[in-house]
Image (cartoon, rainbow, N blue to C red; front, side):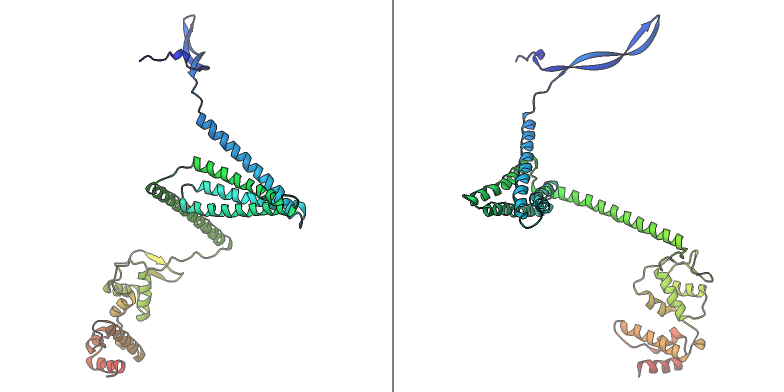
Length: 349
């Protein structure tokens, strides 16, 4: 098969530069030399030319539709308001459906997001056409209705051309590809939302720090952990106990491990920072079941309160039974006689 002579291809001369050695009196230097080369000219892309022409024609059609609708609807509204206000409001009718079509184009890869602008665009178009048609009818004269209908079709033709142009440039995706695109867009939007939230949090924290520095406000205390709450509850059950005794009770209850560095709470008191251990029961119940106090230092009301707590815990179990005398003896360190009397006061039998 014979090949075409490459000399018949269209080309154009392009000036280029290259570095070449140049020697004078035995000294060589690298200098720049200009030369011309033939670059092939690609054939005309008629598809691109036609698409550009159609896009230009569509833009002109839309511009003509805006001018016609603004003139017609503006003259209609100018009967009741100032002409400047009437013509300004008239431009809204066509700009509304044009903006909806632009939003539909931006959401062309998200079917759910594009559905809203598409429906709103048709509603805005119908309203604009009705206003143009009403203007033609109110003008009166022979064939006023026909003039009004033809005038309304200008906006319909403009929207029709724009719709066909958008569908030509858009790409129809199959269902699986559409789902893939939507998931990728959702992930990108999630990252964008996270960045916005982090930026807002950083701004709020910066403003808060500035306010504390400006007004010399005290620094906020760290949030209490479960170990801190358990220690406070144990301290309420053991008035006068020191930190080592409180810690020993919490370790016995299985709520914390050994204490670590102290955490300042105020100017005169320091609590130990303890690591919480996972527990199946609530911290208050576990502390109550372990924390004990010398019965000789407890009043009658304190003994009754402790016995009632133990009775409630016993009734929560399965099977539900009232607190026993042995439990009161062990937990409160009472004699059997005192435990029996205390149980009778709490249980009633």
